[in-house]
Length: 371
Image (tube, rainbow, N blue to C red; front, side, top):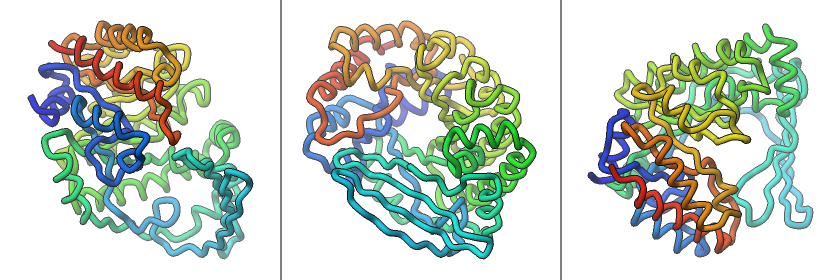
């Protein structure tokens, strides 16, 4: 089998020639990815291209401006440096009042922290949602490049936010949980309004081009202990199920992304109809073993995971090998499993130990993953 066939077979919960190996955000076949343009990642990325199965994370370009809308909001941004940090403060001017956000970027780390969120109260949410909704337009011109680069080395995966993600990320995390738990009906109205945007934008995205897999992000914000299972059922299941139905109608598959403790919401996740789940973190960061996830999801949902990045960054080669073998023992049987780290390194230069442990993980997965 080639990598494309192998991944599609696993996604169908069938048995390929070996367990597919994904390196998550480290995408071997994308010439524009950060890691493929960072010399410190060269050795690892070459091994990834030669030995793993590519899930190229790619979305069509769009004109989205704020909160799933293309409406031209008025923004005033200022930036300053504090040592190795670039801090950008942005003020959004609206007819109902101003909102502000602060982002922080640390040199040599490929991520951005939101240190001030747009909304500090439900009244701020009302201001944000009062801005006009203009449906987003998508430009798939870059699809020809990424499709050509990936070829038979894998498949392409787009990422989507569900309405819970859009609502939760308006506020600081603790404030979001208070909003959802204590002003639940207000939160529910926001979710319904954002879901209409999600669905219309998804229809438009699918209309311009369809890729093999769509990753839906956001459900993790409603997992215990952040919100009770009843609110997961209310604010995740029906909305994600509609997104999954739309994706299936276009001939593609859906992957539900949910970090954290999923034991008490796994049946609800299965009820969304998604074809796969990631990243299935092991205890104590998660609260369910890979073996139990696989047993409960068998035949219904392909499982991606559950090798944690901290093991790849700090563990010994022997520990990495043993954990990879334990993953295969827990989830390989019957197909429907893709071994994958639960996160990816964001530092540059890449630590030599991390590079070596990634290669050890890949080689061990090739050794223990054959059927």
